[in-house]
Image 1 (cartoon, rainbow, N blue to C red):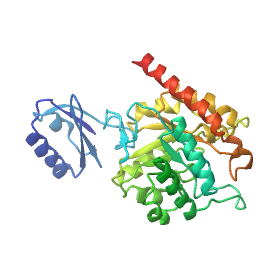
Image 2: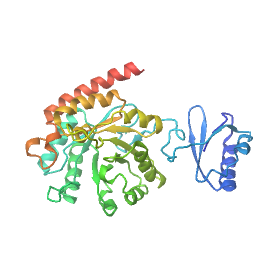
Image 3: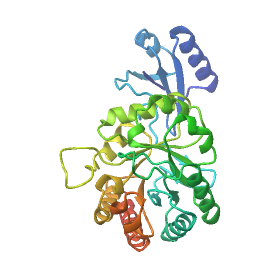
Image 4: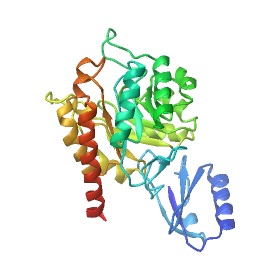
Length: 339
């Protein structure tokens, strides 16, 4: 349930009304203060809440019931876009275009440092790289694990780029204490125990859409994290599994405006995993910008042919230079057109 308060409601009236709601109906009340109004979001069993009584209160402008099962991630509860700002100053969701770039897997110090320097020069704002790698085959390269994390931290020290890397287990959370953005991969999107644990930490979480999950299921996974107290969630569309075999997955770009209508959380797009083909990354990156994405996650490798994982979808640093130049130019034009 959402309650919009009148603009002339005093802070004292708001505090008293909120306390009354919590005591009278045994619900939790979230407060969102916007530029033109204050919104109270009631979370819990609201079936017993008397709408007539609420409407009769002097400070209440209007009351609406929310049908969607997600509350904290719902735009109705939080009309303004969420902006996630890192201590280093980078922002996601503020209208700018962030780019997370780097290799699928961290392979060695020389590789990650070189790629980090190159993507930074091209305009990337984050360094992505896999230390723990979930692979379909148990015989495939599984990542350097803790050594990979150390190499990412070393590259961050050299370049200043915040690091984004994937967590596989709740048991690893302590290892990720100094990671800037923790990524939850598609295979773990509904690992609810992991999501609950990530909800208890104060760190941005990048949540990838599952291979065959609906948008509502995806947002509900974000709700798990937010219900634990962590509102710093970034959604990432990375393609879904369909009957089509021409690409690795089917990139659902319509998910970007749909999610933005339903939720206030920032949304980025991963065209590398979505298509599985490096020659499609540029066009899908441009399409993602045109769809209104807040950012891109692009795989870049110094030598894709010899990459230990996902070389076929990785750009060379030179190719990334070209893609970055084009997406930033398109973003500028997009902002001018959209006003």
